[in-house]
Length: 69
Image (cartoon, rainbow, N blue to C red; front, top):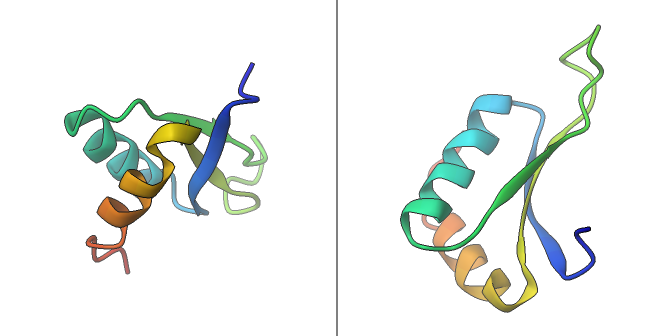
């Protein structure tokens, strides 16, 4: 399904990944999240954001401008 998609961001905080995905979508960059968190222990695991390979560099540059601390 996601063979031509690349991981551009990963966080243990669902909110951060959602913000990144929303920003990318606003800028017309298709983005999807893949939640790898444990359903019982949401502090374990990551929520990853993927974009199509052709958008990777643009998405990476956009994400680098965010202050996600």
